Each structure stands twice: as structure tokens, then as C-alpha cells.
Length: 120
Image 1 (cartoon, rainbow, N blue to C red):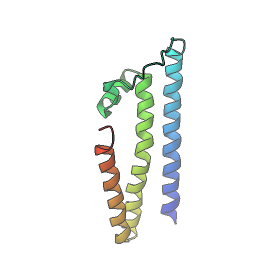
Image 2: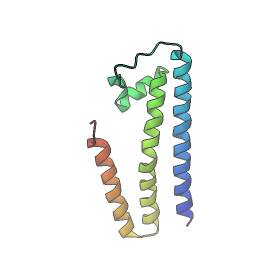
Image 3: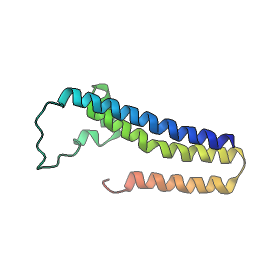
Image 4: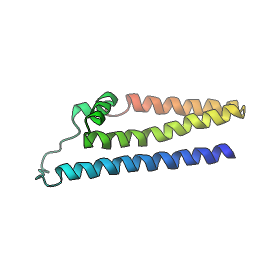
């Protein structure tokens, strides 16, 4: 039961941290660009350099507000992945090999979908 509580706390902490990082990046973005005129007739996605982990990391180093927001989103995505890894570790500690295998399959599916999913 102790493992379940720790995994619940991991999810709560991960989502909270991700929200705080996105909020900080959003506040910084508004402070820098809030007064600019927006054109909404054409959609402009994130720049190509913020679509990779390396690009986001480099943007963090330069203090880019958009990179901070993207990093918060990466934290949000990493939270359930970390939970599955934690669940596998708890099951392995308890020697519940069936559930270690199930957690491994779930982790493989998550990894596959993140690497080869839509937009890749």
C-alpha cells in the first residue's frame, strides 16, 4: 500500500510542477510580449528549434519563455511515464512478475507512441 501512495504523490507532484513551470513561462511570455499586436488569421506553431528536447534545453539556457512553456509540457508528458516506471519497480520489489510484465508492455506502448505518434 505504501507504494501506491508514493505513486499517487508522484503524479500529484509531477502535474503540480509542470503547471508551475508552464505558468512561469506564460507569465514571462506575457511580460515580454503582452503588448504586441496579434494577427490571428494565420496559425503559427512553435518554431522548429522548440520541437526537439535539445532545442528546448538550449532555449532554457537563453531564458526563452516559449522554451520554459515547452519544458513544462515535457514535464507533464514525463509524469505518467515516471509513474509506470515506478509501478514496475514496486511490482518487482513485491516479486509480482505478471504486473511487472504488464507495466513493461504499457511502458513500451507509451514509448512507441511518444517516438512514432502523430506529428513525428
